[in-house]
Length: 105
Length: 234
Image (cartoon, rainbow over all chains, first blue to last red; front, side, top):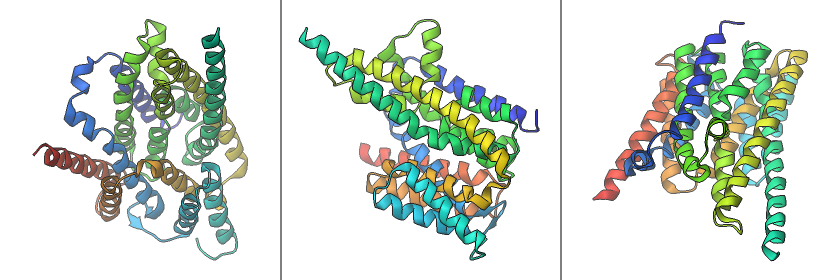
């Protein structure tokens, strides 16, 4: 058990509760027009924010390092319609090689 | 007998697709297992997330925020907000599956992007609703099994490797999220949401605690969706 035990348990139970709630809530409430329009957009915004943070943040500082290069190569692979695994492996590979050669951190 | 043959062929195809999807998510599960350990979670904690939380984006958000030093509250909020879409999926899946007892718990647990998408895709198929139900259970089971095995293997593997960033895992995870987001950017509006949300998060990085930029990005996206919904009503 580490310091992360309770966040892990609480977040897991919330995730399950959200799924289970959908099986309990009357359809009419969740089929409300506004709800239906906002729910699909919410994950797009949060994922975009998460990606930005993952690529540029080092705690509360913005840094430009090997992540940016790896992700750029991953995006090129996506544009060329490469499968998921290729995108991920390529991003890791390019970043790792550059770090090993001291081209970037 | 024609229908029976037809439906056997359809179900074989569904199983093949479900296994394919399961294997695809497994590549992602490997990196999740690795990230969990790299962040400082124990093997059991990492595995519990794949068993109980079982929704990839939320798992990555929780662990990613903890890794960035964002603190427990930001991490739990980010993971939970990303899990809200499962609530909407569950409503649809409930009307499809009409489950009882234990089926209801399993149905809820297996409600994720992949199983929901497969069920929706088969509703208009040869088998109609029965095919859609079959697609849901096949995909849910497949992804659950492969995702958990992959988490375990990834966690074990990274314990042997040491610092995952020398392997470029930090870039790989970000690239993985971009790949997940990619098919959802299918209109000018969704592109606008993605760009504005990302910019808001970047501007917020030095200004607020880690983890909060992601919540702000989600908040801005919700406002944009709300504004668009209001405009369309005029």
